[in-house]
Length: 175
Image (tube, rainbow, N blue to C red; front, side, top):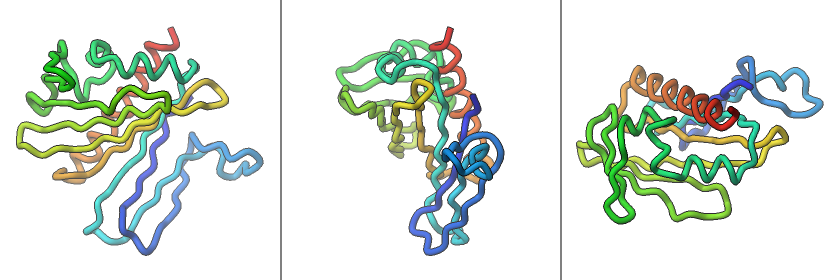
């Protein structure tokens, strides 16, 4: 399976659909089924988001339970946790590539929602929407990366890190 990414710049009056190789299966639409989707604006002032997904050959509940367990974060989420996760009530204290951050996940739920807020050392809080979805081959995990206070190069690096983290999650769960 291939990790898929697509991008959207919010508040965009014009949207361009770009379909690179590897990802999107739209049934009978064979010209598109091997591709991912990019939604991009021509306006450089919009907040950019990229959606990174990974298909995992496991039931959604299994993916959700593993990914939602803070003790597992250092095993797969290198972009967030590089060592043991400390708990302070509902808040997680994490040594990350960005420095010491705090993380708060949404409450456990049956909908596959793993949204979490990361408060950076600068005090900026970034909301990270994450979903575990049912997929014909098991599950698909979808992570939205937002370009908040990042250069284009940093945004590209963060997107690549998330894609690798989701691949690592897949590899751990498909063993």
